Image (cartoon, rainbow, N blue to C red):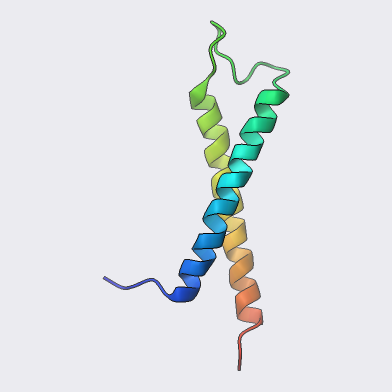
Length: 80
């Protein structure tokens, strides 16, 4: 199996927590401003499935964008 390079591990170590923080922040903001009751089931309970979908969508989006931006930045500042 091929090992992951050090630069890729660093990019992942930055991108994954950034995505997790963004996902948690958007779920938190969504539950605070729950005007249309998206986070509530019909019986009034918290809808964990919907909250998980919101978290994962923002987590993936932010993680991928952060990883790509770090890759572009790293490639543009390589030592020659």
